[in-house]
View 1 (cartoon, one colour):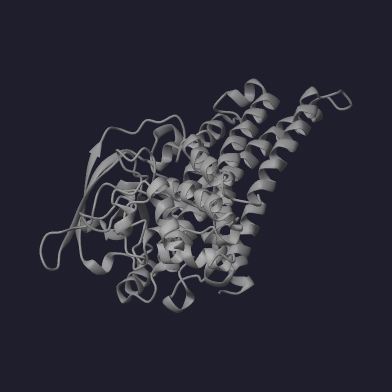
View 2 (cartoon, chains in turn brown, cyan; view 1 turned 135 degrees about the horizontal axis):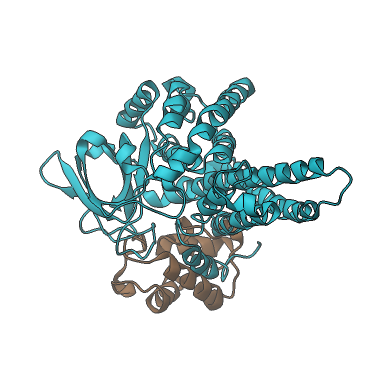
Length: 80
Length: 390
């Protein structure tokens, strides 16, 4: 469920050249073509979608590099 | 890490080279737009090009704070010498902080110590809109053991004077533009096809025309860590730190010249009011703002660098901090130099007086353009949407 919501955010804001539906959970999103600018929009949209705020120490490139890492970041904020 | 004494000895040696060599040739370097050969011969003689190489590989074992102080001292006497020195140290920092335990790079660093090799970088590229986080040129295999690249570089600072080049490229021909690596090639492996001539407004001694760069090399010459890591942990923050120390050095010398002018005026007419003295006081305020931004950024870098796995340097808050340093200091340094010209009047405007600050003003004006400030503002605007504490 959480994975599906993350995929939906990526499909809308990630500007990926490939379909977010088909991405494996461990695929590197930057290698798949997500730009730094798009990653910021993904972070904003995730905050909105899950009603959380990522603290500064979590806002790193690696925290948003795959669906798994995003899922892990959300888990530390209590989103299961 | 080297001892405090090693750092102090290095600083003394750099100050001596700055005062005795860089200062003596600064005007001819500027006028002729030529490489500061004398300064670099002296720096090589002192082993300064390997200051950041760890001691167990034969280097000076010094840190970013030492390189920053040295960039400041050289910048005070010759902006171009300071900037070339700073850029070389940035490349060395990228190697020593990201080579992991690669045997090839370990051998290379030993040869850097022995031969005092000068490293230039090829990071900007025609067609990327100034975004050094993306590449068009790619590492391209030609056979089982040989790799090649061809990169259109709009500027390569001191490219024709360097012994080695550190070049950013896509990892492979089918990699995304943001999937970059950094490759170190020696002059013997590289062909530089000049594009255009070099006759700029300032920083004339950096000799930074455009080139088409072609090279063939082996796989082990690719730095092991991805450039996204090298960039955020080292190349971007250390560039902004060392550049801003050069600009602070130039602005400090402009201020010193303005102060010398005011003192000379006061001595000529003891007891008479010196109108320029008040302008100098205003100028001190401007210089102190620049110094505050530059010095606090260095302290914040050292603190962030000391966090486990340098994790603080990977945050967007950290990117914002050092981007802001670049923008603020590159705008403030020419402001100070122009203020110094206002204090000195015509003798500051003339190129051949003890109070000349034209070169200072021209040199510092390059700062806002080397990685355009507007481009950094766009990045910051985006990061500010999600960063929480600034």
